[in-house]
Length: 289
Image 1: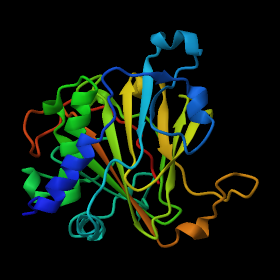
Image 2 (image 1 turned 90 degrees about the vertical axis):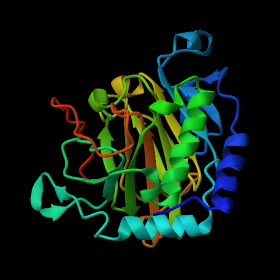
Image 3 (image 1 turned 30 degrees about the horizontal axis):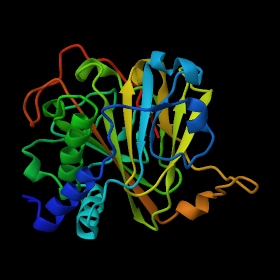
């Protein structure tokens, strides 16, 4: 069992108490999101509409910088747990069963099906690493801020990216197993040399990049509105960027860097436990890398 210690409870409370007021959003246009990988805190409209028409926005991305503060011991525990193959076995590559995808993945609290074999970690939450519990608690606080029912959030999907070649292709999170329209809340935690990875938003053609956001340790993004219907998102493999790009990188920079992404979701179940998914499942195409 992993119980939240006083330091961890205090950390969660400190994070949630400093959240910006998201109940009355001041929308920003997608041009402002696309202008820099380092776009600051804000609620950004992903639809290509002018500032004067932002009231018609249907898809939103909320960016919250550095609000997920996980104590060092809880971070270490989470990375060790995710790397332990007895906890999270490698996922076979559905395109070539003799190989494995480069990221590790599991879902805490729900038997999530998206076309790939993956690991389910049943509840209750005190069986999960502390960082996962913290993400769930904070997601519920964010839900309150955005006018959503916090009790709907009952599962956490986790991805571990090690090195520059682990990524996830452009995809949508199909909502067949989730409560439709409820935001998906994503938490970033970096390990090793802690080099930040980029998160991309694409049009549905998978080619037109809407925005690319550099996610640092502790950053949170909320995928809101009709984003899963109207856009795709990804974590592309690292490619070399040279000056004059303001954030030059090379794959070698990520050799000893790791990233865990927790996405907290409202699955269609009322219990924090492993339950059968609905009989009719929809494949999500959640990346093969």
